[in-house]
Length: 382
Image (tube, rainbow, N blue to C red; front, side, top):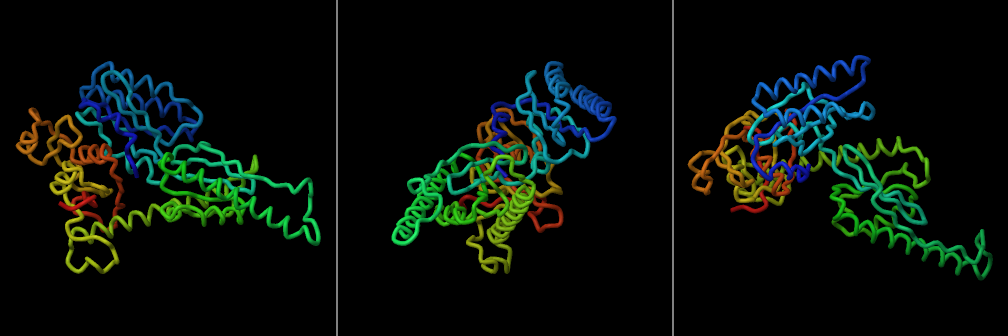
């Protein structure tokens, strides 16, 4: 997953109020439960030493949450009397939690926002395509490609005899031109969308024509779905299930690929070369000290975070800069940090990864992840 949306949290050091709260309203006593959760959040922030202005900003935001359409949970980050980010969660937090710390406590986010890729979905027919961007929280139309339509001088059926070939050729050319127009628009939208997966649905012939015209790097992350339609009011339930399945398969494949590169890159005996992975020993970092060194030099391409990371709460030393992180206080001072501060390793490394536009992947418990719960596939070896 990409965490670039967290960058507004790194403009300055806090202290920050970080709140994770269950906002489900599926029971009859939901309003009463919600008030109790909000009181718990307020109590935790006050006990942690949060200032009154920031507490009030958090509580005002929670109080004005709409009753309908509430997500399973929310994460709020506030400082200086202002809520800077309010993020809907895809997974309900186990319990409401509020902390007050120098860095925003962002470590729980990867497990709560979901790791589904952002999808660009193209609903295709012979007249064009509608393009929709989907992520875990919402979907929205981002573009429309209008193709060409040839009606053959008012004919409603294929002319006979000597005109038949000419008619068919005209129709074929028109379909091909429409596929070109749709493909060009998809190629234009792709880098701007931030999507990781492209889903083509709709007319099977035109869908395949668009797929074959896509640039190779986009085609590699493209799937076709059978049950989508561009028609207004068309049901999307079957398509939604197909997209969800495609997202799960993409996420699993992406994690496996990253773990294979990590295992090969750290040079574990007997693993290099056995998986067909184009990686060399030295292309990975494992453990807090090694990942901290890589983050400081902007080498982290993919940060691997174990779901049950034993070193998650380990102290590191930080400065105001996102790459000012060290295992020892003296190291931070040597980087020019006059007053190093303690922070959690998971929060500090996620801050560095998000600021550097590195990918962050959560390794579920039970999978062979990095020791201590921290690893990285590097952009280059140094």
